[in-house]
Amino acid sequence: MYWGLRAQNHRGHQSHGFLTCDKDEFYSYKSLDLVPKLKTTEIQNWFERLPGNIGISNVRYTTSGKCDDQSIVQGTQPMMAEADGIKLAVSFNGNIVNTQQLLKEVSQHFPSFAFSCDSDLVCNKLLLELKGGKDLAAAVKATMLALDGAFSVIGIIGDGTFFAFKDPHGIKPLCAGHSPDGKILVFSSETVSLDINGFERDFELEPGELVLATKDGFKRHQLIENPKKAFCAFEFAYFARPDSRFNGKYVYEIREEFGRNIVKEFPEISKDADIVLSVPETGDDPAMGVHEASGLRWERASRRHRYVTERAFILLDNERYSTIDRKVNILSSKVAGQRVIVTEDSVVRGDTTKIVIEKLRKSGAKKVYMFVTFPRIIGPCFYGIDMSTYGQLIGSTHSDEEIAKIIGADAVCYQSVDSLVKATGCSRDELCLACVTGKYPTPLAQKFADKMKKKFLEGYKEKSRIYEDAEESQGVQW
Ligand code: SF4
Image 1 (tube, rainbow, N blue to C red):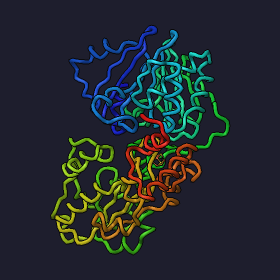
Image 2: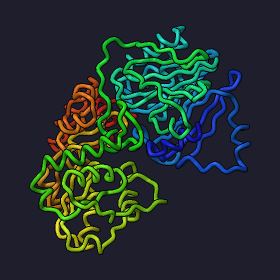
Image 3: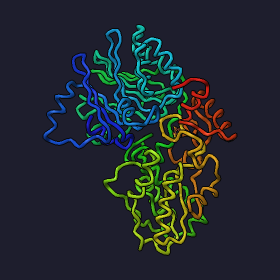
Image 4: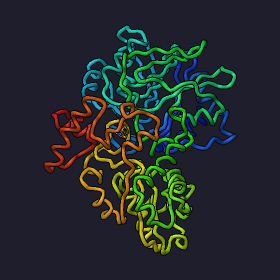
């Protein structure tokens, strides 16, 4: 569990936590920041602190609730709850849109419930269903139907039941696997946590599916009939590790294809360049694709500082500038006088890309063309990626040409939605593309997006994340 979580630290760096179950008792260890190095001298302490043979773990970055240290501590998962002798713990990946509605319901039944973030609500909502006498499948189904949003959940009940489920759209990844001797069963967001342990991948959970890990193997229960899949397309461009597999394909191969696609879509610009560079590391794989399709040399002249580990995208605004400035270094002599294509996974606010371009210009680059693998982001994400207001998205109110001007590029060339979809191996209606198309897979998100976009375009200044602001604006306070 330790190595599996460490392999996925890119999915959240603000806090980490482990929880085990032994003889009806839960034991947990939680802390802030990255999963720490495991010192040989401390291994025994870890085993003593976390006894048992079932466990769940989580790394988190905040997309719901407050971002101060105390709130991050409270929001650190796994979450635990107990009522009427039922103990439940969950590790949750995603984001819930109808938190206020759930908060009302949960607080009515658990008056002492202290709300910290959406994962807490999911845990308590499921407990509420179990407490009402439902079996696990019925309780999970009721929870699935009550939530609007994205949720991949792994959980343990105090009696040792170990399970996982995915929301009816399957927005977040979650797979199942086993150890070579078949004695250990595992659920994980990405396959890298199986690889690091030498485990085999069995299957990706289906949208609306509940899976139990039992002594006799996995037991699968499809709880939602004809679910409408909407897997997050941003996983392919940015979030997942390149050595993870979705749909039987390495994310790396898909990102290479993205690079080849942009060359095909912008042949004239490709001909007007001397070299290709990447914004490391998510830009590296598409750079390989650009190199292959254009014949341009991939110059490894943008180097990343190995020990500045934060991902710029998931930092707070005031941390982002200095981190990207410290993280990426340019080898000036390789860039001076050159017309450069720079591959980048996405342009969200535009500020990190701007810094890279400034650095390239200072190093003497004659032209800078941005090749961006994720299409222009025009709307916020409701499902667990922290780009959550129209105001922060440069693409929500600016054209490609305007964006190029603002960030100092000679051109910004986005991969088209159609090419992205084709490269993933999924069909268009199996993907969530809401932030680039404005079509949200869940009804409440669509309602909030339409309402808040209209207000934003009329001059409204967003106060917080769209799903929090929209609920507040309906008269419900946090
Ligand atoms: S809105 Fe965008 S980032 Fe959010 S889940 Fe959908 S594709 Fe992913």
